[in-house]
Every structure is written in C-alpha cells, then in structure tokens.
Length: 158
Image (cartoon, one colour):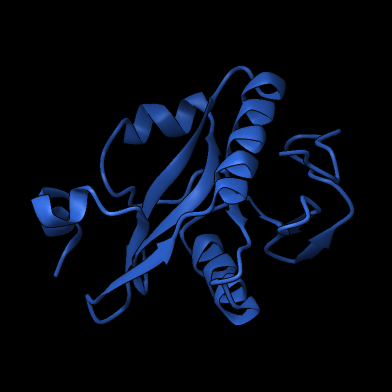
C-alpha cells in the first residue's frame, strides 16, 4: 500500500488512530490519547509564536527510507514551504520535527524515527516525553536546548 491509497481509503479516514506505513507498506496505527493531543497543540502553538516566520503544524507526513512516518509536530521555514507547499507526503523533512512519546511508542521506535528524519534533512528532532519534558537533538547528538528555537521550554505544559 502507498500513502495516496491510505489517504483515499474511506474506511481509514474515520479511525481514531495515527496511521503510518512501515517499510513493507503495511499500516501501523497508534491510538490517540488526550494528553498526547494536548502536548502536540502546546508545542505547535509555542513554535508558531516563537518562530513566527514559518509554519508550525501537527501530523506531518514525511516519506522516509522506511516508508511514510507521521511526525507529531513540525516547524518549517518559509524556504522549506516555498519548495514543498502542501505536498503529501513531504519528500524532505522540515527543519524541526517533534515526536511526542506515548505508551505505544517504544524508545527504539523513537530513536529509529529520529534517524530517519535526520536522513531526510531535519536540522533538529525533538522528543517530548509523556511528562512534557523536552529532549532536543541535532544529527551529531543531544543538545541542552534548541539551537533553532532558543528559549523553547525544557518542560511543556499540556
């Protein structure tokens, strides 16, 4: 199955799950939780306020080496948006990609996604723990804070 088939399948459009495709084209679904959605919203709103020149949004599909992954939150610059617009899925990763951890995410999965996003050009990948604690990474390792969005809080309130 490819991403356009997922998007056009009416049986999948009403499911209360985040849908991604694994490297074999099989659908993977993650149940939604309210805290997960609240953390996504808080991060996106904060990014939009702090980095007003670009676009911050949730549920961004990105074509990776292991098929389509859907990042919880992203921020993209005007230059990124000019190149990619609203194409779905993006063939490159936005500058900031954020994954919000949940009980269904295993650490190994988040580490793999982080690597996939960096391979597709992300400048920073952030992981938000279920507690709201933020972890910031560049391709060369962990950061004490974001370099692209200085002052972004180390703890996000839902």
